[in-house]
Length: 118
Length: 113
Image (cartoon, rainbow over all chains, first blue to last red; front, side):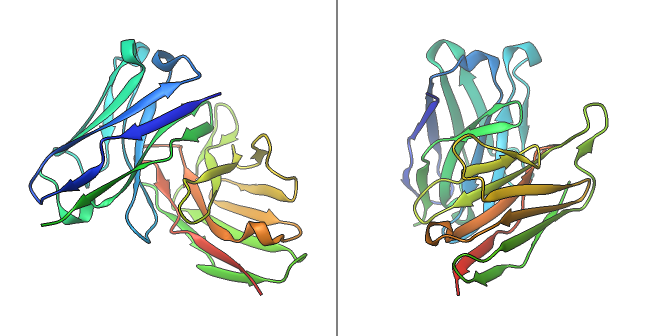
């Protein structure tokens, strides 16, 4: 069974940094693209960014709203996905989900809440 | 970037009746080389992550009741619930995965009339 477990969320001040993690199990992590998606309280879903697999040179892509501030990375030896968030803004407050894609199908984690507030 | 627009924003349907949600993309999400539409539908209930219902526009995810169906191609898509059940109250989203940045519709809130 595919499992994705996010961690690392919490309260951070504007301008601060936070690193989220996503622990994966139940599939061959190194073979798959991994994404981050977020949802602000009471709002819709926003794709944040992705890391491709080794076969695709671990290429990363980002939404315009986070490019230059957020970094997606992975450690295939630990079956883990990361999201390094710098220069955080109040509008980054959201539940952050990690996702794994299986040729058109996608699985989601339960999410971790990040609150950016002074 | 591809913009996804859902209609309506909210919908109230009687139990046992049909519910229809539409999703329109600003450009085609049909990939010509494999004739697949890169479009998913999700159901989200309060406090839960989105649940995949439909992928490739019309393929029902394993375990999803057959009252849920997806149709459409190119830029226009529909999610249909053939006979609404109380447990179907939720917000429904479409998503294109044709090109990054992947994008979602704004959501449709489905309620019981």
